[in-house]
Image (cartoon, helix red, strand yellow):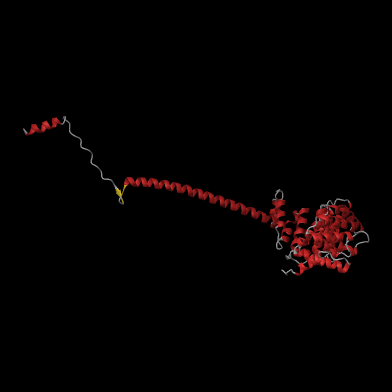
Length: 383
């Protein structure tokens, strides 16, 4: 009976044995955190690592680009330095169209310590423009009080070579009127400043003579095209206090001044007056173009003179061994009245000194504005 009962229970279940569910495996833990949660965390961290790696690569690429740019800048800088100090390098890039520009920049930026080094290393590649630029730079440095050694520049082989090259260019007609007048003015300034000896040094005297001959040819043939060239030429003779070598040069300069004076600007006109004033004692009779110059003074003084222009013109007249014409002095007097209140200290000092000199030595009447300028001069403080 007991057996029948068990069989009937099996038949009631449909005749099949029930399937029990699989046992549940307990979740693994690591440090108190479930493995499933750690898997997600690892994926998230891996994504962050990938992002950080991308950022790192971008930063490295940026740093590399900056290093490359700095290296290129340094290379260009070293190239510019080599232009100034390495003749072999200059030879290798002489055909480079940028060579002339680089050499020009090196000359312009040169100082008293390296200007002659640049000349020595680059002289064989100098054009007429480079020679003119070096003369101007050396004269500028000397005028500014910088010590371009040696005291006698012709003791330096580089500068001696520069003078020789200038002589060759001038003899062969390589300089135009502007370059010749500029070079003559620079040589005159260096001579007047004691850095060149035109009396004892035959090389300096020879260079000056060749420059003068080339300039005389240009002036004679009327190739001097502007007033600045004539003013620079006259000022060169004035600074040197050495008149032109021939009467032909005097006459040619006078003819050029008569033509160009109509367009002379106030400062150029004042420079020309000063130059002729310095040369007047040694000039042949009747060759100095005073009348055209004074006509121009009268014309400019009526309308366009600034305070500095008036002061420089009055100072120029005070240097001469002759008094200005009545009309020129009258127009300068009126110009002084117009600009006296706008004058700076230097302009006032020049006007006071110039007017006092002209009144004392030439017997001219003091301008109406002199008393006011004198009061302002008395109130100045030394700086």
